[in-house]
Image 1: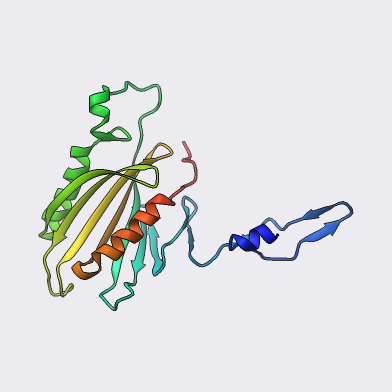
Image 2: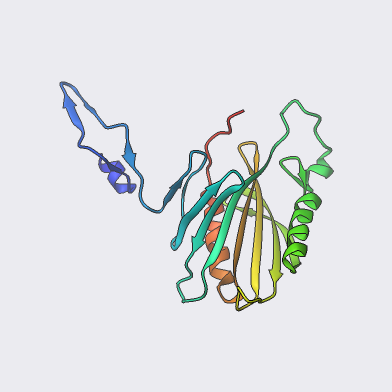
Length: 197
């Protein structure tokens, strides 16, 4: 029980003693900063809170600490990685893929989204974040009547447990560094449940 308390997990009821052993309750309450939707059980960065969940993904509100406008993040499953017995691409092709999805296809999804939003792609790069191979695309949309300043979009694509995930953040240009650092922390601690096949 002391270990659970140190890890921020508090049992909902007191442990019961029965002769020679202690039985802990099966239902543990999670700290408020942990998000659970049936697929994901993940710690959320400070100032992140769940806003909605749908078949297309989970959305989060991000409150920047410096009083900047609120930012948003969305986590979604893009694709299932091909089965282990499927035809494997050549190693030179695999370096340009994530979970069987080509970087050009991932980049194209961002370009299409930016065309619809009146924005543009600024850069893309491959990285490693918290032991996860990540393909990141950075984009920007201009200020409009809803957003008083330019919006910076960071699209992070990674493959974990046979699924390709997308984490998208959108923030005012002044809060970009803080939101990007939080997103990278989020990815480094992201350990979703095993996929149901």
